[in-house]
Image (tube, rainbow, N blue to C red; front, side, top):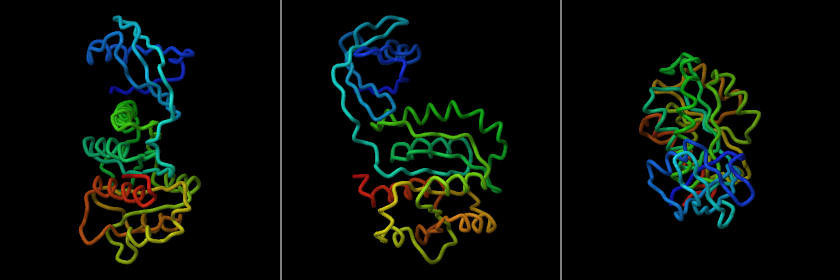
Length: 248
């Protein structure tokens, strides 16, 4: 069944008034008609079954049939700090990390990021938010992950340290602690907010690794093979949520 996130102003007691862009999608793209049912979410973990009442060119409304809390949201809040990279790769990370269960995604610019222009990156925020919203709808999420404006590397580190209980950094040159080792520590399950720092294709510079470690990030090995950044992002997030009983 189709799912749509709607802003608060679309809800009028037991009625839903769909905004123009979604109304167009319902009528012209999905070809839904009066009597069809869809799920509607308010972004606050509330999920409503809605029966379409009127489906006109510029006016689509529905009646709320039932309400419930969405059960797909992880209890552990994981923020992904991801180095900016080429468009297709970065957008795949946004999509897949949303599907897996990230609570927030922060683009960062490192010394080796393929994208160094803040203005150019910021101009893509609307497109990126649409990708995240569509991925959240497709995967049955109850909330849309937050997406911040791109941040400088140092700023991203400091903000993450202030807002999270546990800070993790997969690093290809780490030859001691592995992600498996860290997740085997029973104490880590007490953390309810976790940040994961993902570097660019060329990796972090040694100075950036030092800064992250000084800020409180724990450098981790993901195994003997060198992984692409999108692979590292997805498997680290998936394993962290799985180990906290938030997946499968």
